[in-house]
Image: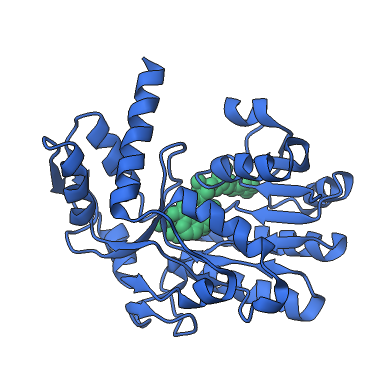
Length: 319
Ligand code: NAD
Ligand code: SER
């Protein structure tokens, strides 16, 4: 049985990955680590939680040794918009944190999952059907840390045989935990506005096409790549994956099918718009499909239905 550590466990991905890992590998076998001293109630009830600042290698090594960890899902990071506001801190957390995780993995013989992003691409990358191996010259601090992170993980694999694997996630859409300050956050905010019968002001321009994915598919992908037979992987860091390529108006029109009175206007945030324009429109994820069977279940219509049902249910629980 695996013994798993999840860093950044209280974030958008971690808050859904931890329960998924616990139901697969056992509650006691998944240690959630967050930056906060006390976990959110849903994690506290469900299994072990420890406070960890990922910039503290001694604390990380102590947890990995004491808990006899063999697999680390490393999610602690700053996202694109926050990283652009605090580039020095983003380097410290995203790169320093990853180095600490890879060192702990080297010393204690752990496998590592580390998500990269569509942010690892830049304005000179081919935007349509972006190949698995292509130009990666991002012009954001987030992107710089993602490309460097992919390379560092590959280095630890080839130099020290650390089994480090990753995917390039697109924008992730979910309702359980708010996103942490990314460029694709509009695709979550829009649903919150719609279910509250409020108009939505979108911070990206009409026509800004980006890859997106519903969280359930993202969680399945994280588990699937870590369970894939090593021999079947010709790439490790990191596989392109996507489920849909959408612009704000596509999501708006899909929501209108459920909420005909919903309205959206545009109020562009130049910083996030520039980041979005530097990213691809649509990734080619054929290598992930071929090498480890990646196959997302949610398209725009299915995801919209789930988001509205999930958020409406949450509203009802609150009242
Ligand atoms: P998030 O911002 O929701 O969560 C990140 C977590 O890291 C937060 O809980 C935060 O408290 C924690 N953290 C920040 N600084 C820390 C520190 N010094 N020590 C310990 N913890 C710290 O992010 P997420 O959306 O869950 O993303 C997780 C990973 O997936 C990141 O590497 C991100 O780049 C990547 N990713 C996310 C998306 C997305 O759309 N959510 C897309 C592509 C890639
Ligand atoms: N959703 C993430 C962001 O916008 C993509 O990595 O930062």
